[in-house]
Image (tube, rainbow, N blue to C red; front, side):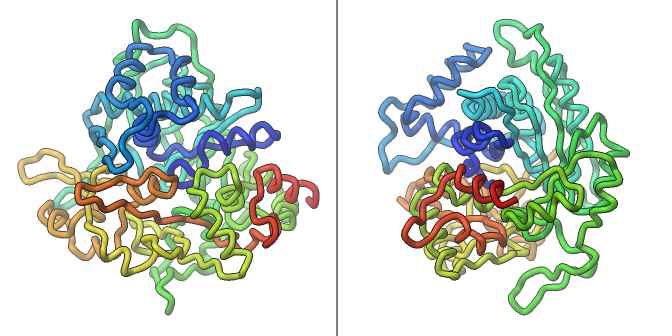
Length: 465
């Protein structure tokens, strides 16, 4: 869920109650830096890093980024070096440590499993992120927004701290070519490479069709232990519609019968599977079980519970809108630099408002969703459709691809109360993603008691189902 919405506190609460708590793996290197810059409230980061196996790396990170008592409230957060195809050491170290911290804290205080969720489209930090999560004992790796064929093989390699690689795609003048990024844990293991094998987490790819599920099972580089079957009503990124890509009068992509998942095909594959996208109700949980599913994946209800990482004022506003029947979710075909449709919750003062979006100065300074392109001199460059249009065009991009694109990197971190502050004093604004199931929030709370917990969500779902 976004970046830091399904953070360690929420995942821990869910896992403690016997379900699978899943932390978001998006932007954890930047979230780590900003927590340290804010003085590490509660000392949670320090506590986790005290268990990290590479103390020299910890010391370098704390020396570079920790501010005792917190930075000045009007001071910008530092910008760590961006990830790149050659493996930027500082960025990779922060990804290893950030993923370790999140999983360690989510697992703290109980013996139940914890998972982590990645976007395949955010490829640069994949390898160090998965290694860091495995160092902390993550039980399940979930990945969507792409076709993660090679993740199982990477997980197999990291069990024994072996080097691994992952494919990247470079847009050339005439064709798309594949290159590989490489990661060797030995370059980060201090003082020496661990000899104890790591537990190999189960891998659950997110699929939107039986065809994709079959492709993954046939061509994946290692074992797949389960599937998340996600429809187009789920929050975050949705798979594009199959067909001509029509847009309706409201400006949303049109989904049809071809986009409905054949659950009999999924069940026939013989793997456990969970259904996602408006399955956060007792009735839908019953329906999922009747279809042969092992269970459901719930996002929106947990995103709006008290343990969520969303800024409290944002969370309460969205809950109030849901209770009043005024919550609106727009499937924006342009917002995400990935080109995938992206669910946006309409919220006053956020980038969901055109005038707010148009007033923001475009900048790309986190760069998780940058794309690769081949320069005229043969070297590799980086560009993002959400960066300034002139910059993108100068890098060979099409100006039409910049229309409506929003900087998800900055906006999603702003959602959880750590917005970047610009030199001119302006502050990055949020852009919240929720699923269509936001209309069902009144099943967990009411106007007199609008706050509800993760335990309330599970009580309602499980008691009635």
